[in-house]
Image 1 (cartoon, rainbow, N blue to C red):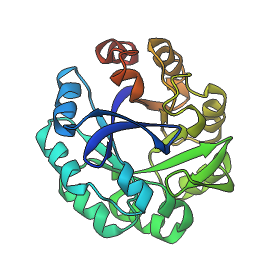
Image 2: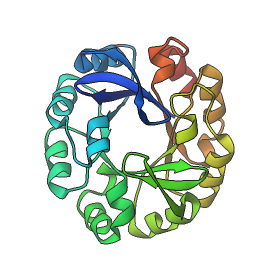
Image 3: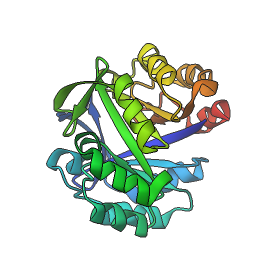
Image 4: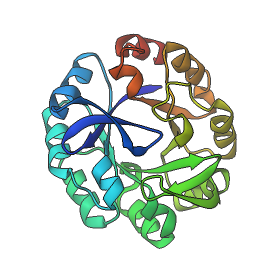
Length: 240
């Protein structure tokens, strides 16, 4: 199981939001490249980056700094946040990003997603950001009537190879992941899942590790790392 340190970028800074709310921001650093290098030096195998400005505005706002991060470190990065065009996907992949994460556009436009998967395959992940099991769109501000456990069947048919599942209510709250919803999702699909939201400490890493045989590929953690609740080196040892 891979532990993904999260770097959420807003106005060029590394921040975290509470439950995805843009009026509840904690700033941790003004140097995202330096933060990426810190996580790499601590043994991270992969970095998870979110362009929060992009998620809010519906188009990437921090592509240049994200590409600089990808080129400054020697481990792969995955990136999400407002990515809704083939041109932006291509620019990121050509710039050194290993995996591009799609949300709103992929959920709203099946034909687009089919084309993207046909072209880039395992370089694409789909983000299922959920509120009480229902998918949300547009930076988590719009809740749909689509159940995540139903939507994964469509993703399987299209050939998606990676899902990132976030329980919005848990994100940034340090209350532990929603294991019940996560297990329901794992039981409904054979697509590998990266869990996100609510990691509070090493015990949560252990609980997710126990689900590895059910299809957990990795876990994303942000606030717990930045606030010293979780030690990345210890987390990687447990995850491996």
